[in-house]
Image (cartoon, rainbow, N blue to C red):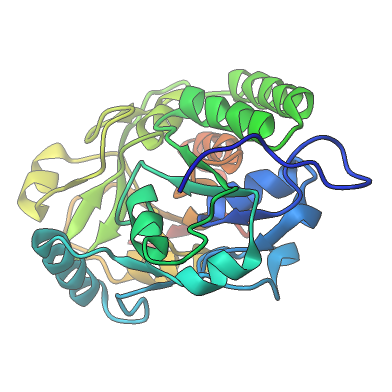
Length: 305
């Protein structure tokens, strides 16, 4: 693959006419930028309502309907053996003839990386000669907003992206934090437990909490229930990566009632916490609300213990 200057479509502002998004957060950002009409292909995980019916270019080698422990074993085995967790339909990607392909380099478990695209098209005659490949790398709010601006630049709408980034920063700065600084544990997986990383610790801090595991901008990590027991958080937020509110409610209800987790809440991780997109700002607002004991219907739910 090679990089080239973005193409200009007749009747459209300067920028690529045909965009492929291989991760949900990029699809969300493209629609936020008003570029949904240029998206010609998406990943299997892209669930933006207006992206339905678009060609799907990826699939996971892991059964997402399996129990969490089985998914963890399958992912761990693939990573240990150096196998990609996602497959890209190279011939379809080539046939779509995109001007811009958007992927990511933050987490090989979460979405397609540039290396997976390279492998998918390596032996195709055209090998996407005109495609500009943009890899998003944001690991905290600042990085996410940088990615938004980079995407806007690559897509030919830098002013629009800059305005959206400024609005998001203003809204983030205005989040009313909890005043009592509760100790907060975020769980991005429950069997086995993984704590939240990347932008999640920053969301906790912005909401007025004290994050007990994980650091802003660093990877999520595996923990043990014994380790968690010693932390005795005041609030535990179940935000299993790749799941909405309903599934996270089920995961939270399945937690050991004897485990000292404080208040337990489930949230819509896909919309608010799992994706490096503008939803992380709303996620901080939801966290601030639940730290005050306030439910946000459709986005969070307190789990009786």
